[in-house]
Length: 399
Ligand SMILES: [Mg+2]
Image 1 (cartoon, protein in one colour):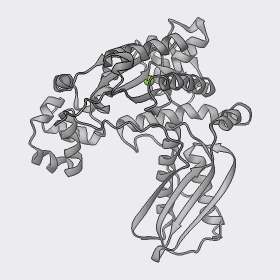
Image 2: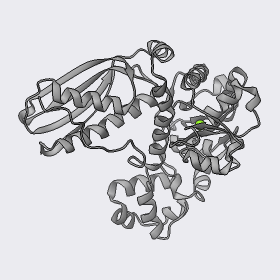
Image 3: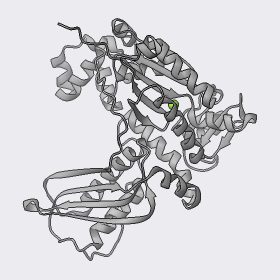
Image 4: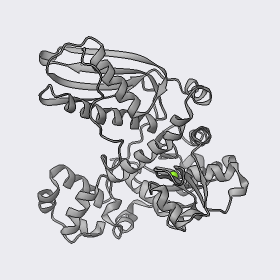
């Protein structure tokens, strides 16, 4: 019997990406604390902080007022998303020269399946070195690279060696590598679940392994218990899905009982729009067509779509557009069984042009905030940070 071939996943994470882009473009900022985000004196958060700024305790998602309190002398900059996106494209082009199996996790993060590249580059460590070298020499950016038998270990690897590092975790070293880590390092463990687990006297991944599965299930539920236990033993997916040219992004919800309450419909739609927008931003897509899908009793399904004047990946615009469609596209007025929203109609070159010439400046500036929401959601679970949950817009009720 042939032994299963070892899989190797690399997680590539650019260091302090927005801030590094600024330091590259403006040499006078090099070596200085640089904070990219909201304007000091205004509401809003830090989108990125250079490593010099992090020495003052400044971090992404921190209120800008707090950053200012810690270091008023830092260089404060508004995000220049066009610059970051262009740089991101260059980095992804470089990654594509290593392997076609590249999956974007965000504008500055990617998973690569580097299994079977020994013949080209040598062992995994050499692949990691080559990735870091190519990025640095061709862009001037530093990247941290974690390599391991699956995505979780690769990601924890890159986190553990930031900035400007390389960490390879061999399969037989996985348990020792993650054992001393705080349980917060596992994926999908939000604050609430962390507290639950902490009350069991469990702080580290190694301690989590010692908790009997039945006890874990009692406190976390079956699904979460199984997931965290697997992760505690270093097991996770090793699938890397190359960014395919998908045609649309959509999310939908089926209600347990049919819904007539517009607040419920609007809230549901808000959550769905946020999910669609987050996926779009992660995959660096923006759609000019917004589609609303409504199903009533008996599988009676209607879709309505509208074309925007420019592509969007902003949940607010998706929500507003879908809500307008709901009210103004002659849909039957009766209880709703399923509601869904999606975007489509993109072309990344077209989008780049639109960004340069006709996207309102305010929208561009918002993008860093959206990214921060994505980051925080990824790390701490959804619902931690979102746009204000207001009541449905008072659009007149002619449906
Ligand atoms: Mg990064």
